[in-house]
Image (spheres, rainbow, N blue to C red):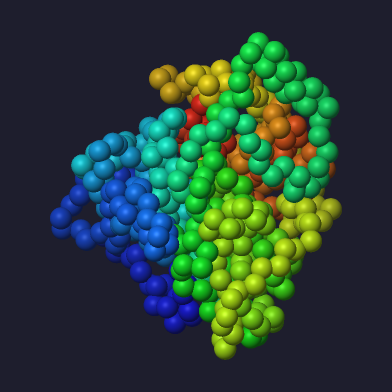
Length: 487
């Protein structure tokens, strides 16, 4: 979906509820005397990815991605969510600082949106920047539920003072379809920098895997996909992004995948990264390739100085060939779009940080080790934090926090998988990656490399329960979650 400047200004005044609104952020039953600012309807729909490829999935308002919600920072909105599906649902306001009863996580205590029912949500949007909304239910072996479905949509929370240093704004949601289970299969692993692995973590992970295989266990189930799309259309079957020479185009890119890490390149162009997960970076830098873990967002400006018709797509030839791309077309340049693979490029969060900055000393360091138990749960891998798999029956908090204190999560990955780690209702600052200090990059999801450690700092300023988890659906469903309780 694309918005020019005039459309941007038109949308900037939406979502006002009025001074008579209640002062508390809360979910409430529908009141016919108050008109909702937005209505979202969850239902099974057919999505035409291409004329010869139509999929059935659950969507918001009959489309995938769901509608772009442009909100104003600090201006209350009312959202009515109707659930026409046969199962209860959760709508998570990813990246926002919302109270427990509207955040959209059953683990925290958010009420479900009942099957064939509805909930009215009242919230004050924030913080400003590129956020999104998505399903937050446990899918386990059902590939029609949760983030495997089409329940994902972008949110842009306009800051109180918009810089406006671009000519056109384009929102792109990257998503996969037609999921299936397999045993084995590897994701791209060699794109993160620094690439140093911790020998002790590697020894632990490899020893556990060898012992499992020696007992005759198969490799645990993984999820693959047959079809890929950007904004709900496979490469070559949607409207191109139309540009003019000299334009500055601000791309807001969301990886709406359930389990996939994505890359994106545009031949002959570079991306000036200005925000990560909706938060401005201290050091905007031009890069030739973007990498996004599941649920990560990147806002980047591209200066259109290389006329032609180009494919903006994933580096993986197979995924791009099965739809993961979109055409960028200059005015007056039609014909077959071109793809030219870029040179190898390492993704390093430190690149966007504050050089030589010192970070505040935390009040407490919380040590966390993530491990995989191969095929331990009916053929699925079981995931643990400090040797404990999350229990959905008890949902007992693992960590107790004191309101207002600064905490450092020291995360150790004893597996070879990359984990996009997410903390609800907070943002965090990356302070160390594989032993290398950094500062200034504030996110709500960060990719933790295989057999690596990472430090992230946050202030516990949201009372109540906050969920912490790997954002890969297959991992969080099988134990890779923990609750923080802030009092």
